[in-house]
Image (cartoon, rainbow, N blue to C red; front, side, top):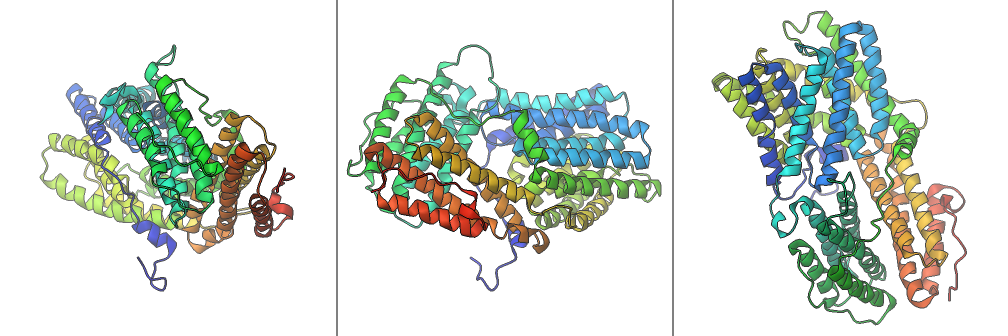
Length: 619
């Protein structure tokens, strides 16, 4: 751990931080089977350019091939792929019919639109990234043949990776229907997180364990999102998993209430959720579950939830999953809101500036015989997207990864046979993409080698030096333009997330204090409150790691999020206590009033924008 006096600034600490976890061997296998075989087939068929386009699409799809369920991967991979195909078509048409100035303006407007939509969430962000990258490629990359063939090749490449994701089983999927192994792992993770929170009750680790439970519930909620893989009645395996997920919600509620009480619970309380997790993973019966001592409302709620879960596991009846609303209206509201406008302006400015610089250098023939001006705006897209990490951190990692990857490829290109060696390099890099995704510099290194191999396989000369120069120029453009002051109030993304979390917390609190018996609605509101809080926390942490011109706008938001987090925890404890006794204790009422006042102080307004209903039966 760094000493506070010598700790690096947040943007540098973020640049040095890497994700951890087991190697996703199934994703590694899919990466190896994606771009390389497509390029090899195209070489044998004499359609190298189409093979390069298909392999690029498979690479982009591989970047979006994250852990989760198969049904969720349809959205996570398919939606960005469709956006990428649209961007490639639009870019090809713009490059063919527009002059440099008109092309720059058109792509800048596209950046404004794509950046605004990117504020809506992970899938929208990936779609915004792909539409801009492929628009730049379509406008600048010399692709022979009609545009529709290239678009079809792009869809085929992404579709091939998606087909591999849907068809190939994953390790540990033989316990039941392998189509639902992602859902099974996510639901088991929820029960494990409940057990971990119970074990941490009354200790300093309780807050982190509660956040981990929220993340596990978010993962499980997402695992059931997306289109059904086949029409008709729900398969028995899916009905069972849906019921098991729904049964975890009251367990999570009781565990949160016990952690709020700040008193340790007996070790036997965590044994039941652990056995439920093992039953989900092994697709087996639970067997007898150890019951906690029913000495207080939260422990009685935990015991009742365990009994309900055991019954649900035996019957396997599906329940309401409380999934988040997915539709055009929330997306439109987010894109047009303060966060969307700020994202859009920053992305549009950086993308447009990069296109203008690339066009100028290209028409001044500073690029020599190379036709790679599209690399500059495509690189700027990955650098400027605000949801991909702090801007300075991304620029540093991108520069380091590109230099390393270009030098590595230059050495390999000098000794590898062609084209077999280039195909092998694409296979190896495709397999490494899921592992390298843990750190932006590592991912950039692998992708740089892969892209340079595809460029050379397409018949162009070795381009390592040009790749380094264009990346460094893109980093400079994004660092300068990305920190320019924008019209309107800055920090719109953080403010939008915090306001959403405040509204969700208020809706949850109002429902609990109304003493409604509709538990399904309560659990849905609780899920939304914790989920929006997690999203606000992530946005605040990201903004806080920016350089001071940007990070200062998130300075006060972290305190507001912390108060909201304690408010939602307290609301959960109130819900459990009201279920058992029908009234609140003075401690519950006093804590709610304190949090209301603290929120008002931090937000600088009456009640902090939070309307606290009259407390029922406090005494």
